[in-house]
Length: 243
Ligand code: GLN
Image (cartoon, rainbow, N blue to C red):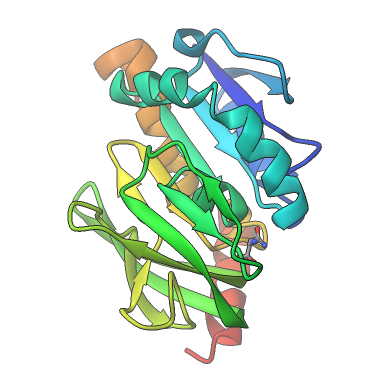
């Protein structure tokens, strides 16, 4: 089996050790004998959308987001089509904001998003910083996801938007409604970084399973891994959040 990952804007959107998420996905495939290919796409470079099983978009500040928003406008339809056809996607923080409807900065500038997610973001007055724990239900299982957040944007889901989970500790999407992130089909947007996947192996495997199922159907069964270190990292992160 082979998994194909498209990493979008790795140079511009990489402020929270986002590459750690890619390293985790690659390692968890290789440990199971699954081949992986990671291709990077910067501004002006367009992936052959249907060839990829997984798309990744990391975090970035306003300056980088502005550059990406301009380029992403021409990519939104391809990305949305890939997600409709079952590709998995993970977008963190600034990347999550740009996949929504729009992001309005504190200077009053509006960056148009590609509307893959039913959400919009407006800059708040204070930064929302700290450890987060989120209770999330995926494929019938309940997980506690642990991470760190650092954003001033406040994201609101519109009526059809499904949150990734419920905030147990920390701020989440907007510090008001206890929602964190968004999930649509196999696409996830979230404020959690740290990076996120090394210490949340269940989430990494949820995304891998969805990605491989797209290509290989029922044949794609993930062997379980030992995960001692990952679980320890997870429990340290949960404790840091005061849980
Ligand atoms: N402009 C975003 C915010 O602070 C950037 C988020 C991020 O990726 N740090 O809300």
